[in-house]
Length: 287
Image 1 (cartoon, rainbow, N blue to C red):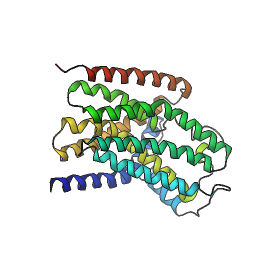
Image 2: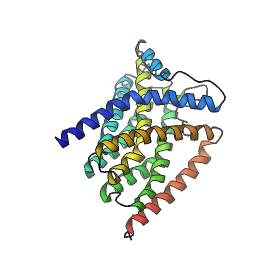
Image 3: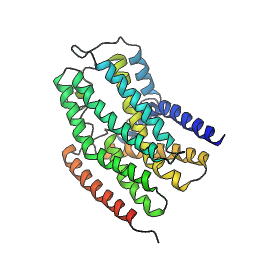
Image 4: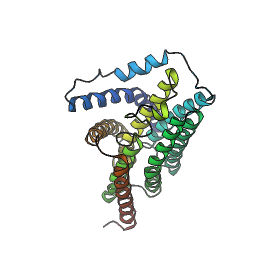
């Protein structure tokens, strides 16, 4: 019965994540608007946008016959990653941590494949931009996930790992200034230039689910080792996910005028230092 309750809670969290991700995106847009002295969109605006795109005609890019399949695969992998990350709250098996790492890596690879299949130079450039950013953060994030899964986060000094996990998670959300794959400040729209209608909706939903996962990951990696009650984990996990999302939104506004190349070097150096510190601290016996 206890196992069934855990599976039910993980499933409920997955459905909640899919529903909440676009709502949190609208909330982020409203926060950014308020910080810029604007009103901002309704709280359900992102869902309105997604549903409107789903009602449009499906247009396959010229020469991009595999694009639709790759976009749908990306959406599937995003949901699979969400499911697996939710299981972190209830199952401390190393296999779950390995699966999280595998899905994170697979999502990055599919993003690159998606850019190539669209048969557009701007899309290819956007894809390689995205991968250059991913390579600065993803290896550290995967290493941290596997270390926590193998050793556990059983004492307070393990919380040192929160900083590099949160830092790499922010980079992986493709927010400012790491949104260079989308090329929003440019005329061409980067990796999404050939996507429209339902394909663009699926792409946007995939990105939002990935952002939700990255917002929840710092809390979900550490909560199970310190909180025994699974119901309490769920409540704290949802609250901390929303708080992390809001923090990421504010950080994106503060970094609005920074150059990606400069910030990328700084975050890579900081992540490397924090990861090494975490490894050293974990190798030192507690007490």
